[in-house]
Amino acid sequence: MGSAVTASTQTITPFSYLRIDKDASTPIYQQIAEAIGSLLDSGVLPPGYILPPERVLCAQFGISRMTLRQAMSLLDREGFVNSRRGVGTAVTDSRLRKQQQEVRSFSEDIRARGGRPESRLISLDLAIPTPSVRDFFELHEQQKVYEVQRVRLKDGEPLALELARLPERLCPGLERFDVARSSLHEILEQSYGLRPETCNEEISAEIPSPEQRKLLSIPARTAVLVINRKIHMDQGRPLEFTRSVYRGDRYTAVVHSVRRSKSILQATSS
Amino acid sequence: MGSAVTASTQTITPFSYLRIDKDASTPIYQQIAEAIGSLLDSGVLPPGYILPPERVLCAQFGISRMTLRQAMSLLDREGFVNSRRGVGTAVTDSRLRKQQQEVRSFSEDIRARGGRPESRLISLDLAIPTPSVRDFFELHEQQKVYEVQRVRLKDGEPLALELARLPERLCPGLERFDVARSSLHEILEQSYGLRPETCNEEISAEIPSPEQRKLLSIPARTAVLVINRKIHMDQGRPLEFTRSVYRGDRYTAVVHSVRRSKSILQATSS
DNA sequence: ATAGATCGAATGTCTAGACAAGTAGTGCAT
DNA sequence: ATGCACTACTTGTCTAGACATTCGATCTAT
Image (tube, rainbow over all chains, first blue to last red; front, side):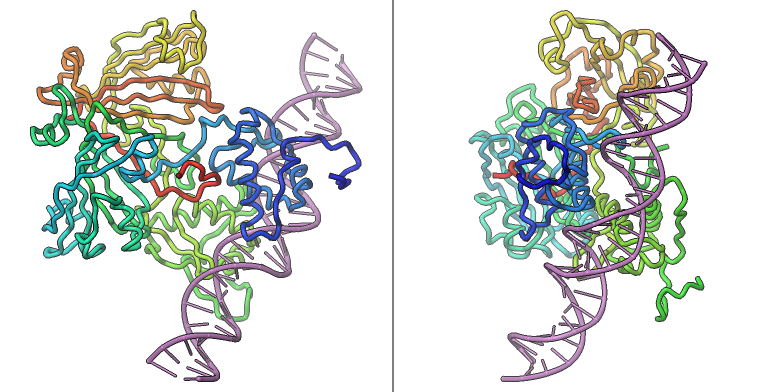
């Protein structure tokens, strides 16, 4: 407050009240990114608002410019702000946040939609995989996969039919767990140390089979949304291959995408 | 070659042959990111390969470490490499590239799938929008929107029925263009300077109506994939609201997602 | 053999500057 | 009034260091 950084009058901005702890274990740039990020997130600053210049912020925080720019880089990367050389750094509209599409399990998905997820186990087998499944898992002739078939419910109502396949090699003894009660992904992470990293989904529309119709209580003249998802782990190792059949009248897949940013390699565009 | 950076023997790596131009207009860190990126992309270095330490690369390129780290940051952000403190920087499996889901027009989508996109214009009207459409575009009572209805074809076969809505205010005189021949997105960008930035899609499965069945020549017992896409521009301004109906037997939506990275604000998780 | 201390090497963070390059406005000359 | 040079201010790029933190291997004492 009383510090005379420059002799001129200091404009009071919302940034004047942010404080950082230089001795904390979390790095300064992260503290600043979080502080400014939450300032933007709370809606205190309207979209288009021009932030104070970097040098002013540096002086206020008492840090070097490169450190501040590291924080700004984080904010820019996630779409909180938008810098233009020679002009300044402006607050971006919150609808424009560049969040990556996230890998979500059924449970996480339903909870994110404000529902209560449940499962009913239909079968849990150890089986010889079909060729396409074996290909995906890169297995030998004899290696088996777990096939977990469940009815998935949202708020007590049947929503989807799910067939998850996992290689036995990665999670031996899976049948000992109660896959109906706890989330399959929680079991994989906590008991086997397996973490999904990337996911590729193929979404298509189909007419339900009589069996699907019965298991999901699908009314007449209703289609189903079929999602085939392939999940990989950190070094690209295949983890899960799941086919989910959702009631078309109760479920909608949501995809968020952004404009192609100038990539390092823009070979794919013709 | 002849430079004696250190007295010890220099290991020859593929990086030894990369050259940069310090006087070029493109920044050094970007040149280096591109050079190393293309090296990784060409598959010269296998996944898991440990790059030379930063300080070695700095010496080879004759640049400062912060500059090299800026290049590495780019590569890391796009998933080309993976750094671990105390260990080193390793090449990531190419299947693990963290590409953002991209905004694609129908034409771009079909071309990316290796097909030839075409259009047949059904109607182009200037109409009073429905409440939900008006809400999205933030329009007043009297303001109108263009409604462009087209049959979209892939390799000459009807694939989708598309109803695109655009506010008249943004693209007055749109009817003068040949929206059947050229891509709507190209017209918007080149003639009106309108560029899509983000896109939100809701994908659902439905039973086709008799009219849809006729226009798309949909066979019996086939569902349709319905995609509602809302496109925004740079400051979050709404640009386009489109409803597309795809033949379920010919089209599959593809979604790529990644594990939630440690975000600046991780408030959403309960 | 095994557990623990040590140490070298690697990335992570940060500093205090410098110059480059783009933008928008000021003010002058026409 | 109009066009143009100039200037102040902004972000972008880069340097040459410093110390911190983490990991893995080696060495040592038990």
